[in-house]
Amino acid sequence: MAEQIQKQGVEAVDRALALLDCFDEGASALGLADLARRSGLNKSTILRLSISLIRAGYLNRDNRGQFRLGPRTWQLGSLYRDTFRLPMELRAQLRTLSQSTGETASFYVRDGQRRICLLREEPIRAIRHALKEGVSLPLKDGASALVLRAFSSGDDAELGAIRTQGYAFSRGARDPDVGSLAVPVLRGHKLVGALTLSGPINRFDDARVAQILPVLLECSARIAKNLVLPDPEIGAALPIA
Amino acid sequence: MAEQIQKQGVEAVDRALALLDCFDEGASALGLADLARRSGLNKSTILRLSISLIRAGYLNRDNRGQFRLGPRTWQLGSLYRDTFRLPMELRAQLRTLSQSTGETASFYVRDGQRRICLLREEPIRAIRHALKEGVSLPLKDGASALVLRAFSSGDDAELGAIRTQGYAFSRGARDPDVGSLAVPVLRGHKLVGALTLSGPINRFDDARVAQILPVLLECSARIAKNLVLPDPEIGAALPIA
DNA sequence: ATCTTGTATTTCGCTTGGCGAAATTCTATT
DNA sequence: AATAGAATTTCGCCAAGCGAAATACAAGAT
Image (cartoon, rainbow over the protein chains, first blue to last red):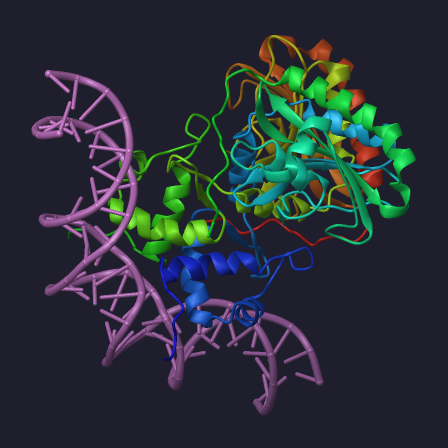
């Protein structure tokens, strides 16, 4: 009774993608040895895989032979973002929202059983919620998670309350230091994403919420007005299982 | 003397990445059959490869079984973008630049023998230069290409002129309908990228250039001032050969 | 209800792609 | 020159993964 884990997929591809996973904020350039250490792969394997990755533009090698991410990642990512057919002013809206409230404004979309931070704008302020674009978070806790679930077709349960009040508020649910307030952005009756304001928990009390909620709602309405009509028919993807 | 093309890299990886290439503006959701047609791969191969791609988040299947790009693409892309350590206000700067001039403002970086449009902001105007973020263009023609080459270490030749005048202007070099004006953004003496304004060729005559060049230069200076000091040591990547 | 057509998924035996230890070459540093 | 650390190439063995074909599923049409 050795291994019961079901192996599926294509090994070589798993490994190649694992190489890309080696990069992160702190490591934007990695030598062959670094990559080998981080990925646990044999150097010759890495070299072989890298040929394919480089050819396709996902990876690059600079002057010194260091590996770096390639431009294709950004291109593909942009394509993914465009999938949601968001109005191009959305970013500007987030920015004004962030400036007028002094908190981090972000836009989340649902992807299967996760939520993705598609866009984000931070205020210029010492203490603020630092949030990286692109991060994938669980759909379990947090104001945006609640909104995304409450307004998704299918999913429902006791989230009816949120659906009627039209917003969600959470204090320290996912991260004990963070408070957040989220409202849905709808195209007709279909959910597009969640518009969220978040910051240090102590700044998010009931009084403050009462103060910023109207701003948030008004912004959401403004965004919805600018959504192009053709519905991309995205529909919540199936759980990645 | 059959085939002389040198085969290298890992076949399975090439194929998996080829799957991702099947998606584009017009095709954000593809059925298995579509994918097979576009990629030329066997359906069972696609299914097998897709398991790995889905597991890693590069691909997704929606309710109807259609394939879509997954969130990891955006995450990786954002990581690539952050590699350049650009000030977060850069986007806002582009926006004001675009608004005050009425043309498309963009920021290009060099990546090997190509230039990548990292960020872009378009004006709200009937006729404008539509440019997609993430696109990779040759380093041959266009104002931004000239700037990127003129200010890269190593590369030089007769581009000295551009280096001394501090900007490049091009009319219809790459695309016959487009005119563009570009200036470098420098961190110390090292090139970070090119700041560019582009639009329909007829709006880009000498008089106009004289008018917008100062705005562009001033914007570049403002951006440079906000660049965080630690140089990421990017260095032009080697040609993809 | 029964065909029909298009699409998706699973099976399975054969073969070739690709694995990785070790040898080799490159490039600093002392 | 000598040493060491990193990058690259070689090559024989074997299982990973290929794909044709069979099967299952879904949606109209009759």
